[in-house]
Amino acid sequence: MEATGGEAERRRLVVSGADAATGRHEYKWVDLWSWPLRAIHWISVVAILFLAVTGFYIGRPVFMTGGEASSHYLMGTIRFLHFVGAGWFVAAAMVRTYLAFNGNRFERLPAILPTSGRDVTSFFKTVKAYLLVESEKAPHFLGHNPMAQTAYSFIYVVATFMIFSGFAMYGQSNPGGFFYTTFGWVANLMGGAQVVRFWHHTAAWLFVIYIPVHVYFSLRADVTEREGLISSMVTGGKFVRTDLEYEDLKRRKR
Image (cartoon, helix red, strand yellow):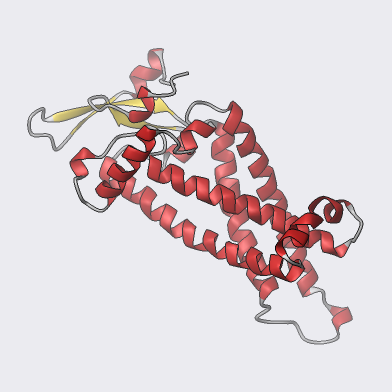
């Protein structure tokens, strides 16, 4: 996890802090995210924005081109672009699923699912800290804290639903085809294609709401902790204080 040798020395940083007792804090570099995870993170960002724009247009075409229908194919083009974005999103989801079982310790399922008693305790302490209540008692994490784990788990469930419901609607254009046969049960389970479309559209708003909230909390963590959380999705790691204990180093050591 931690860089070694000359690279570790190059990345080691000592900066002035606000601690009056010590006068300074020592920071060290730790590697957190592999390049496949960073790649699919940014691919997912672009794909979600692309899907949102094209999907909302499909749901409610706010403008149409004039003239004979034979002279243009606007909706068909938008739908095709939506399917392209869906393809990128599904590919990213497949890589993320693989990393959930074969990634490093910060990328696997135990690091994104708050299931232990320690996680529950840390969750409430983290919530209090974000509400500016007992901030000094907030637990520290190298990877995702339990509040972030809960948010990611929720959005992964939503993403799974979007994929299955999207394929179920896609299959409607070719009854008896692969997608219709494989995902037709989704429409049957939910009560029809129009119901699937309604909930697919509704769930899309959860992504629209989630993105600014995610950006806000990431910026907040960068400002308060000064460890380079946002840049870690580019560099793969961040600087962390050496005088703090990190909860995700106490458990699930592998």
